[in-house]
Length: 319
Image (cartoon, rainbow, N blue to C red; front, top):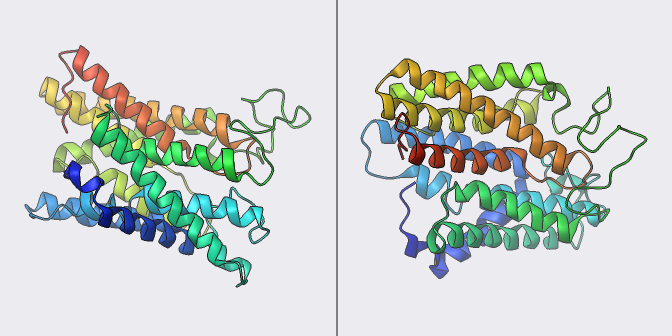
């Protein structure tokens, strides 16, 4: 994602970020993120073929489709729409707020999306361009933007970690047998997390080793969510494929062994899956707005891989 840092603070970029957030608010957070996935696939294919335009950095992760902007704007809009009674649930990132009907005050939902598009952009700009934080600042911005949404727009004022109900589960971190309050009820059991984490991480690592693209697996995972949005439950894996790819490339670069790289992809894919579920149980289970577990997993995993690459000779940061 080769973006000129000075561009982050260009007034034109900030205006564009408002438009991107408004776009996410108008179509819904998850539909906006699906666009990100397809643009990442296109951008990485152009990059692999030697194209000169950085579609991934400037478009997929830029003002139009950047998840810290469009997805973040959609998350904020959903919370605000639920607060106003336009949507039934502030956690609903699948349904565009327009489905609640056209009201005279609906423009406010779009403005909230635009404002949070700018907030997400500025968080990334400060993290990446000023503080130079050793992490995925896009994912960090998605997470922190959603934290701000929870603290300011929560319809039920549930607080950052939500309101725990002891009649539903034995602890904040446990789930009832029917798992109705889980982030992904069909994907929250440990055996499924281990299977998906290991083997989707390995697969993503293998693809990245073959292509040299760290983001191709992420793009495919994000684009696959069109099935979740349109049909129903499928696995959510972009917080598995990106750490898997980064881990695989780091191990492959450090050792020169593609098999070791694929194993590294499996290990870090599993780490991403487990951190994502941890984030879900911390922020989603008892809350009433969406605080994104994949973003939580990605920025932590990214930082971990960077730190290990600096500490051990068998890993070398490959971005």
